[in-house]
Length: 272
Image (cartoon, rainbow, N blue to C red; front, side, top):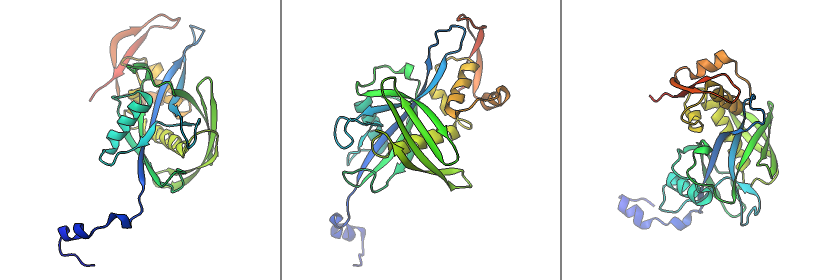
């Protein structure tokens, strides 16, 4: 049928001729925290963590997932992500950046659901309120080779493992495609969201200032270096690390003393 105006087209338009899908927002939140050592002369170990929520309803009842929910028909997607994060985890006023859109037709057993995922980095010690009772921080451990990534998540009570296969999708951008190979109690396709977020973070910390969302206001260079190392999963030589952060931090006149260690100058993020 040929239309002569926008108004004529809209009058004849029948949305029921199209199949419908639903839209959700899922939020991936990372943090780095200290494990306090009994040996006061030893530096505290750093843990890279992700926030998960235990599902109380079907599908995937009693499994763990990222905070997420449906976007209302009249709601901006990012506004929905912020609302969901407050409702499900009692966290608000944090920076969110869009990660990827996940749209496999079989990703949700209920219906055709597309998910827009968001990623955030926070210093969880700065949270003004306690997280929800059904939410928990899980420490992340990775074993990775050229073809697979084995992820272990542990919150001190529950240990969850999943394995994701990876293949190079775009050689020019070094972008990988991921596929779930094994999954122990993580709902939906959230293993793919978690791995995608980790890979994005590894790529971004070298050329952006995103890591400072995880840091307190004042920190030593040793503390900052250990945060980089726990995210990248490897040790960094001091000269290489200094080059990465040379234009990102500034030295203050404050000192860290005590604890059996040599006094160290404190640094802070250099705002542009």
